[in-house]
Image 1 (cartoon, rainbow, N blue to C red):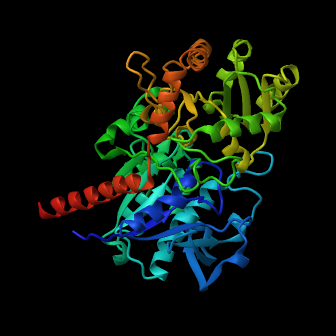
Image 2 (cartoon, rainbow, N blue to C red; image 1 turned 180 degrees about the horizontal axis):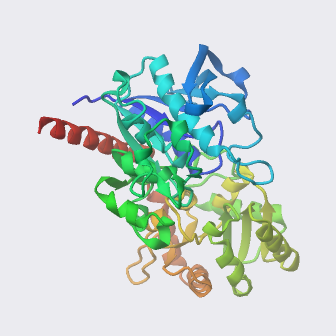
Length: 494
C-alpha cells in the first residue's frame, strides 16, 4: 500500500481565510499536519468576497462546472498556500454564489435560500479542479453538510471517470446540528439517479438531507472526538439521525481535534501581558491583575472565572443565565467575551450594569482579549449542551485555567474530573444539563480555589502538561485512510 497519499480536502471555510466555527480551524491546520506526515494535500474552498483575490495567484483558464438543469457554470480559480506550509489552497471563484457579505447567511442572520446549490457547486468544482490539475486523489475528504454530496457524487456522477477510479471518500462531521436540508430538486442539480431519493440515503420529510446522504455513501465517517461519535448514535445528540448513524456505525470513527500550541501557549504568547509556564507561574497573576484592570474589576482575593464563546444555546448560555443569580452570590468574579443571541447580549450587559464589581462582559469578538482571558482567569466556564470537540477547554488547560464543563463530547474526552482524595484531575465536570448542576459545580470549583490551594495548584500543573497535538490527530486520520484502502484491497481480493 502507498505510504504517501494524494488527499483532496474540501471544506466551506478554513483559517485564516474565512471562519465561522471550528470547521475552519480544522481545515486550516489538519492539512498541514497531514503534509508533515508525508502526504500530498490540496485544499479546496470558496473564494468568498471577503477574501482579497489581489493577494492570490490566478490559475489560468476558466473552469466549467456541470450543474444539471442549471447548465454548465464557469468559475475562476485562485491559489495560495496555507500559512507556514507548502500546502496549496485553491479558491473557487463564482460571483453569483460566493460574492456575498456572509458565508452562509446575510448580515441579518438569515440563511441564503440557495445554499444547497452553492455547496453542490463547490463539491462538483472540487472534482473538476482535480482533473484540471491532474491531481488523482486517493482520498477525497469532505467536511460537514456543505460538501457531504461528494461521497454520492463519487459513486454516481463521477463513477466512470477514470481520474477518480481509485479514490475513496471520508466525511467528517464537525456539528451534527447542521444537516443541510434542501428542496428535493437538488437531486437533479447533483445529476444523480432519483433512486437515491429514499429514506436510507437522501430523503428526509420529502426533502433532501445532504448530511444523511453523505453518511450513507462515505467510505468512512469521522467525528471530532471519540465521545461525540458515541453520542450521535443517541436521540439527544443526533438531531433525528441516530438510527441512520447507528446503521453505519461500522465505519464511524472519533478523532479528537488538535490545538496549535504555537499560538496557544503562555510561555510564548505575544498577546498576553506577562509570559508564564507551569514552573514559573508569577506571570499568571500579572495577567489576572491586567485583565481586572481592563474591565475595572476590584482586585479582591477571589477566583476569576472566564467565558469565551458564542452566546448560543448550544454553548449553555441558557443554563448560565438561569444560574446567574446564584453564581453572583459566590465569592468569585466573572469575565465574559462573546456575541450571538440578542437576548443573551442584553442579559449579560444588564448583569454588568447591576454587578460592576463582580461581572464584566465584552459583546463581540477580540482575539487578543480571548488570549488574555485564557491567561488571566483561574477557571474557565464551558457548560455546553453538546460539544463535538471544543477548543477553548484545551487552550485553558495549557494556560493553567481549570475548565468547568459539562461531561459531553470533546469536553468529556479532554477534561479529567478533580479527585480531591487522590489529588488528580484537570477540571470540574457535571453530567446533567441543569441549572442546579451548573451552579453546584461552579461552587465546588470556587470552594476548591479558596480552601484547597495545594490541590488547585497541583491540578494546574497537571493541566498545563496535557497535550492534544495536530500531529496525533493527523495520525488518527491517516489510520482511517489506510483502513479504507485496506478494506478495498480485501474486497477486491475476494
